[in-house]
Length: 272
Image (cartoon, rainbow, N blue to C red; front, side, top):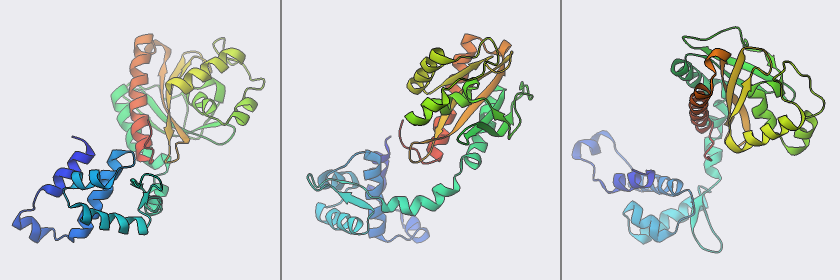
């Protein structure tokens, strides 16, 4: 059932006498909240007739509520089509909550869940403008714990997390990062090979490290985005080479991407 349908059913269902006593509501406020949920669930602007149909209220009642919400900035009305969408005042209200959802605090449950699922070492990494820094970890049942400790700086072009940040850098900074780079192992990608891989990462949203920094050390990473859509972290699974065959790479990539998307939603990201 969609969010819009859920909201529609909720507004139409009459509360029982007991619910009315236990959960007193102001009708207009409840209707306004339902309208906001319906418009938010639509993911696009929506007209007054459609809103009225979904919430089960008369058009005139909905129009008055919409006008009030527009006046206070919670909704915006298109100048050309008169359709409604969520307003920026909602961001102002959510701002303090979003600010508290820093990537480390938000990531901890996902780190442990991914560690339990894969049995490997899981990291969340951030970008300091020059280096990839591993800042938090969770250790799975089969993990090899010597890969990187929290606070360790990893070579950006030779780690899965680092390549996530490189791939999504602004064009000017991206070019600067491709200046002569060291080769750590015979598998380290440089030059055109690295550039091609970064293009693939931008397309698929997943980065791999197959012994590019240390022999026998492998990993897979996916981007974590904030409410603005910017990459603020890289969720990484580290695994030894003997547990990194092609089939396992696919499995780890799917798990990592799933948890990274979940974490991004916790950070306020609503894209895909």
